Image (cartoon, rainbow, N blue to C red; front, side, top):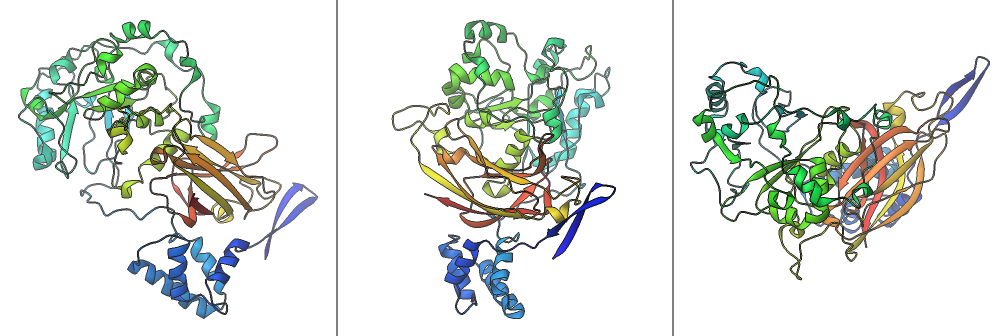
Length: 526
């Protein structure tokens, strides 16, 4: 057992023992149940995998894992520790392994699409870096150049339609490995006026909490909208231009419309007209796409939430950050997802809780790149009612989370990273991000002066809409004099969370997985 020393003053140093991770008592008891004479055979391990981990299929991978653990245990004679090391290994993930996906060849850097007045990092398998400023501001041929570039770049991958509208959009299956252009037709695009963000709409100062690493706490809806004059708002918003109307660069840009480029637009964006209810008019003869700023959606769902959900059943809705987010902060994406929004754009330059939710949301569906909507957003209830995220429903199931311990910080951080005078004091915040009735955060006790904290605490979370919920986990390091330090985070989609005892890897502020830091936890549904 090694020791660490921390300097308190020039003449005094504090010394602390750096222990090794030991199996919690519950793990030791489970090993006794599933072993014979202190040895867990491959068959016993497979039984553990099926009964405790609820792995209901006997895959070759599981058999290889079981045989490997048994062989290692025979070699080193520390059978229960070998079993424990497996439980805290990357092989024991809380999520299914990613699906195999096709990737286009190209550079290692993920391509970025510059769109309107905000920069959004669009995760695509192939694409081009493009923005309007890359074209000549005075050339009347820039439209033709754009068409030629798109055709030459994508070739047969490009999806085009002879019709200017679809009665309904093609299915994802029919669009596999195809590239789709979606924007306003050139005539509407060029008719837009130059716009400016009002100074009064810009957030003053900087968000020190965002810089600290956490970002602002996410909440479903803000109370500031109570008592809002919706009729006045609808009149004002009737003239509010969409994000596609924002110019990038010279306000006097003139461009000759290119009929060929218009033909390349497979999904045409619709310019918003009238009030909020008119925006979400569902035209049975033509599917379309509209774009809204975040606050427009927040206002719309107050009195027109059902209209938004009905609209997104056969039309596309895109939400993007308001222009006043000059600090590259983000909004709560749950509001969009809960109302069927297919495209929720983010400021990717920063970090914080809204981005963590996004990073936790899309590993679902095998990490293939999109998440299927749950049936509650696609169909009315048995009472012919549209799903309302604000309404409290009956509890469908309860998730029990037991946090055993954590390890790996002493391997990934310097010993004075969290505290100059002693080892860290870790605690965990765990909870649910979802509909208002399900959203809740709880926390463990603080374990002082320990790089390998053991909590052994259990929490219960009643769930009314589990198919739309994320499990949030954050590790904090308690600091008496300042704000708590960041110790790691992760978000996991409950739709794919594996039950049993799992090793939960943690990530840094930007969403990058730590090499060694993880928690050992048990998940059960009751």
